[in-house]
Amino acid sequence: MSASRPENVHQARLLRLLRDEGPRSRAELGDVVHLSRSKLAVELDRLAELGLVETAGLAASRGGRRSSVVRLAPGLRFVAFDIGATSIDVAVTNGELEVLGHVSEDCDVRQGATVVLDRALDLLGKLRDEGLLPSVHGTGIGVPGPVSFRDGMPVVPPIMPGWDRFPVRDAISQELGCPVRVDNDVNIMALGELHAGLASGVDDFLLVKIGTGIGCGIVAGGAIHRGVSGSAGDIGHIRVDEAGPMCACGNTGCLEAYFGGAALARDATAAARDGSSPQLALLLADRAELTARDVAEAAAAGDAVAVRLVREGGRNVGQVLAGLVSFFNPGLVIVAGGVAGLGHTLLAEIRGVVYRRSPPLATGNLPIVLSELAGQAGVIGAARLISDHVFTDA
Image 1 (cartoon, rainbow, N blue to C red):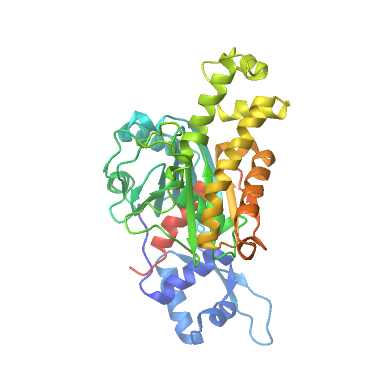
Image 2 (cartoon, rainbow, N blue to C red):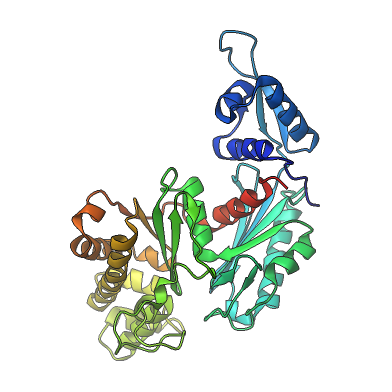
């Protein structure tokens, strides 16, 4: 069941304040939104009638009659689907975007839209069975490819066969009976960092996701920059070397062809098979193929080939990132995604290249850091995406 929406810009602003700042007294809310006491009372009373807010006791006195505390209704629920190339994460949050339940499983996005979305809905069913979903007020979805944000569907996604122009938004909206918004998985991670991560309070930053592929969420002026057709930030397909390996996009020498999860698995498996890395050969003996996690394990054990793969990858990412930093002048760069699990060896290489190649004015006060949201950036960001939509005036 879908909930009511705010009816005007004042109600929408009050809801976003309560989402971002938590419960507040009527007096504090009045200070921020600059409404008279009587006008504020009208708007809050209407939001309570709509089932979006409720009163929660009295605030400390500010020298007169004590003001009541207002909070978002505790029954508000947002659903988040973070669909990656090799996994699905599903979460339920409250109105303040606190994660109440989170389940995930391995899943190959190449199985196609119907199969993958059915799996996501099955996972949501587990959370519903736990009593976490009295109602659904909105659903945010991230997918690992270019998205037409206006139409709510992927458009010619290189690693998502069978998804091109599949009506993800409309299909899930019909299934769950609520508003739905769909975006690129990197953009929702950037929103997650903006809401609850290291980028909280930073208006201009880059979120670089290094997973199966490589992408970049661009936040400018506190909002996601998607570009005209939704493909802004597709940095995995910036060319590093014309003579480089073939990429999934059909071009040669792309960053992703050198250093995404798939490229890392390819190079690690080759090193295991040709005997140049005993440690990787040992790991390959136990499984069909190697992953970025195996490279991290081998590098941590001091395997020279694994360490070289990580460093070369970091240098290539740093080379592309240096150009972005010179162009965009961000206040922060966050590195996230499965391959970011390679940790500080990777981070040191990226930092070294960016700090050497970008102008001192751009990097003089530029932190380049690993995400601290422990795999929840995507689901928090998906919830933020749909709450931004629901908490606007209808």
